Length: 452
Image (cartoon, rainbow, N blue to C red):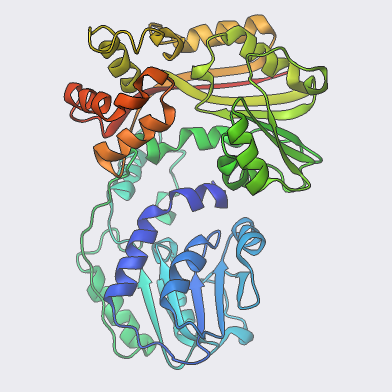
């Protein structure tokens, strides 16, 4: 998948290791007018957010190269400046004359294991370095990911699809001494001050297997209208997700991006901080009567973690359908069952908290007791008139980085019960007693897609 935005959101491991080794390894930086190259820059995020922090502040230029034109275009659009630029180049290709001896420092993170022609790639690095220049390259030797693909390539079911598996595996997949091989190669090419290490490391995806799959990001690769798209974000809150995330996914030449929310405070905040000529925000509750001016007015409608608050699901989904123009589509992510709902529901049955939580059913997702939420949503969407319907309900986990304390803060932001305001800390303590592992959010995510 050649999708620079998706990669920008998931390359946390390379960012972690880049920062660690840049801080750990003593690079002899050129103190004035340093020329720095990042090989395999992807969408430019690591180049600008990580490398820029470590290189000398008075650098002359910071350049990123990548063999993917999509990634280079993304980087140019989002990160180019007077001293930062990007260009398309595969490190295994013939080296253009203008790149020879043109850089003082060359860095690369999690790229060189893709290069089957290792001697060519390392020779190009050597030839791009100016006299006295240096390089730092981090890449994979053996890994469980490679092993999984290789094992499946030997099965009848997957053998044909993975027939070119050796082009995917690192050149050091079978090596007993990858560091020794790389060191010998660098010596033969002419490098000096060589230091090569091969160490085993681990990285735990914070979202577990679910984060690794990134299924919902794949869903966002919808059939976008290529010209003058009109996009709506339902439940936009303060506008941050609308502008920082959705804007990166939708076509660049969109006509307008609109966020709506039932909270006037949220809309006012969004208008103050994010409004522009093509981005606007309005107050609207998706369960209300639909104004005529919103009917058939959008090509794409998206919503994230909002529809579980809508008790009138048929009204909410019907409004989505009626706001879509012919050929438009929607993607809605919302909660089914979750441990948060369970904690509130359990405490509502206690004498101590019953009165404050008397309206608990208005807080719980409409699918709290459902044995088949995906089936219910699918049937409802069919009855309303949606086409190309795809609904899934999967269990997921999310670990709050701040643990239980962060859990308490998040829940305070979401608290819909006025009767808890003065007793919030005490109530949260009760929740934690019921579930000491409440810093880990266990939930069922419903993903609904449909078109008109």
